[in-house]
Image 1 (tube, one colour):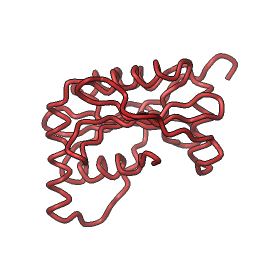
Image 2 (spheres, rainbow, N blue to C red):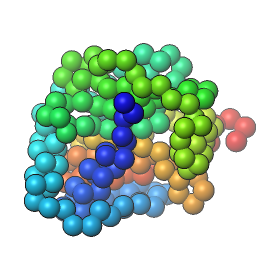
Image 3 (cartoon, rainbow, N blue to C red):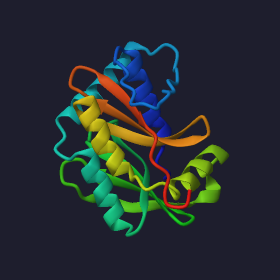
Length: 194
């Protein structure tokens, strides 16, 4: 079963539409996908997930560290909280060479759950492939971006992903400050020779 990272993006977009503010770190441009009308049941489900996240012991940075340790040398390209099953889980996608691992990390114990879903870069769309390849050229890690965003947004990171802004790779991190969600977009410095 492939981890559906689109669900996290929809989760964030809907919560932002429900009144969360955006905090953008320069230089940044936020992409705000719209989902249209959200019925009350979906809205309540998402708010329940946010409540579950707020009570979760493990941080996003901890979940990233767990997945990266499991796949030595891999870099995180996408990570996010998922409480849709009523259980606190993080979905973490790591990448090395042409291989992608998608792991579930228990938000309470920090243990990985089951075997990772393994994919190759060729299974992703052109934009995702471009972002994954660009990740190789930057020094900053997703975990670095998470820490910076948590300081900037004064809260805990719910998730982070790669995005392309004006042809450049950026880390988009969503932070829960307790009263609102903030999207922090960071452009990482280029790696050596780039």
